[in-house]
Image (cartoon, rainbow, N blue to C red; front, side, top):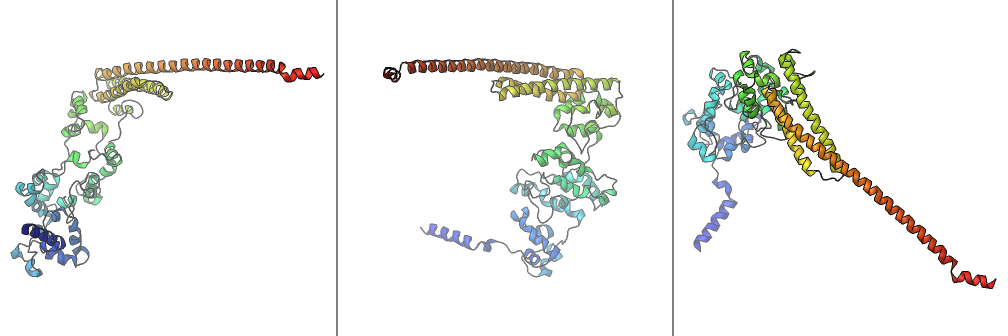
Length: 426
């Protein structure tokens, strides 16, 4: 009974006086009373993931936060570092983030090789050379208000990462010293990847880190571009590697995927890219050449399937709206559209046999489903004709009944007693 009472008392003490359990932090107390940029770290630190995990100012800046005397708490003898030099920031963060024993207490699944990766990146190499203009941990993750990556408010959340990278890479003055373009972010916002990320909310859609890496950020080499794109578009990569373009582009030092689709401004692909006014093939293959002829043939194949499927879609939709049973045809029609998708993927092989197979499969499906639609419409027509005859028969029957009733009424009127009495009176 005494044990229960003691536990209850302890519970209420901790509930009413929770502050007694918190450690003193003179850093936050002092900076909270200051103004402007000196107060900012203390205000922001409330949202920081490190504070939520029990870390404090001294874990990065050193010193002794249990002392009220500024000279004593910020004494070099107590390990006080003050403001961290930019060149030392990655190494400082790595003291914890490269320690597997420490990190795994809080995040067992978190990797501990970020610093090693950073040292291999363009940013890390430039910083090691003394270029303080290179990005460090705080330029991407922020400082004093660092949040978890999955937090929508963090700068490295998928929805914000392109803008975070653009903070530096869209700065003409900053990029000018490296002779780097600054249009990447504007181009990316016109791409299918950005549309998927921002409009559809697909957080798995590619952004800067998907292609360039995050901590080990490095521009993909010409020979590795196809492999980078192939991490998502594996089938296209496999077809491209077997195509005549792969050795041709490699011999010219051209990146295959980028040559046709671009890099940051990747617009939605279309059949018009093969032949016509917007043809990309014509930039390398002159009209009448073997390459141009193959491109035109591929365009005709894709167009024939697209038109056939659209014709089938139209008649099946009319039949469906008319109440006809075409569910099986509609289901098979989906396979036809999948065949069109396969055909457009097969374009990356740049070989007519590879393309003809899914096109012919789709055309056969479109022919069957169109015929099903025709039969459904014929049945609808037959039903309407039958319904018309039925209505005509009903109308004629009603008219006949009305004539019969009218005739009976006349006969009954001629034989009525009222009529006979009148005659006798006369």
